[in-house]
Length: 139
Image 1 (cartoon, helix red, strand yellow):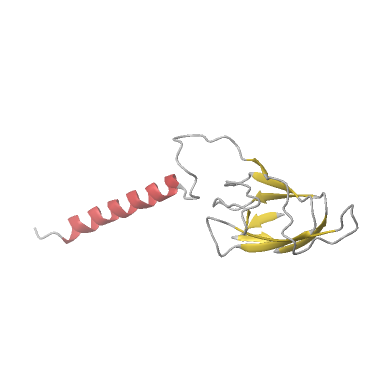
Image 2 (image 1 turned 135 degrees about the horizontal axis):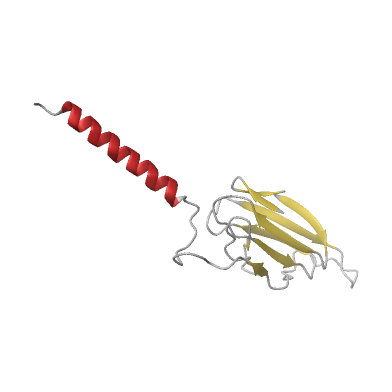
């Protein structure tokens, strides 16, 4: 599964019991894949990071991004060794695992903001203001 343009792609997927889904964040902003009921959570995935979830029982599992709650999707898990469909029974998946790369730099959270570009834009505005101020100053 891809996370791109502040959306899960695809937004709905059907898998078999025992299958593992891996979400890979292709956005500049960090995201999570967190079950509505809290049964699984990939943790925060920065750009390029992945998190996986193995589904051990049938059911429909809705999830969202805790950072951007308007991002939602569902996983429908079908099949099972017992031959019965546990959909809607509250069956829970196995705990999530995350392969988030180690933090670097200052240890601050990755907010997806490019600090260098923002700093350069601010410096450019400051210099423009100073130039305009000196040109409009009475002599």
